[in-house]
Length: 114
Length: 115
Image 1 (cartoon, one colour):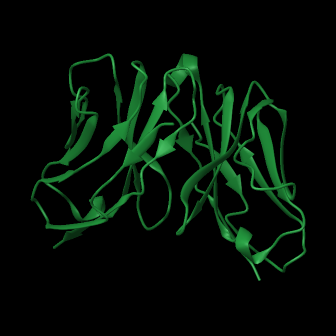
Image 2: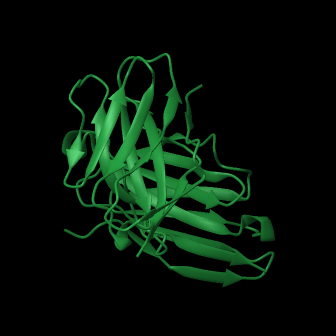
């Protein structure tokens, strides 16, 4: 069975700082996708970034980037120049290519302080 | 384009009543997912459909829960009879292998409270 672990229940940083959220996963599959979703207080689940396991290049989306280490089964999210609007729960998720089912981590509550 | 639409956004009901949650997926998406989020259990997949056909309902907690997808643009999740432990946020999500490479896009959720 696939599992996703987020070891940091809560994090807090000052506005404009850089923060990195950790995620590890366990699978015996070789082809899969990894995602980070953001859930602000509005509770809407918003896709932040995705990574295909077959791609060696780390995905980036503006201030958001990932450090994907396939051998270590690690998928961390880096937020640069953090903003107050980044305050949210962040969920790491995994799906096997073609299987469609998403497996979520427990989430990391991130607070950006002014 | 409109995202995934869910209704109602909030539902308060009494134990024993029937509850129906509704979802309209993103146009062109052929997979639809129902999730439940609680503090204790996090995000759980309840059931998902491909091309309107239920593929995996192993996450449906018990026979009180049922889901249907009569056409490509509409799905319902029904709880009958409802119980206080069903209180949670229920999300619908949709995806398309061709359009979004299996990336799931979520609706705003329905917060259900069963008294």
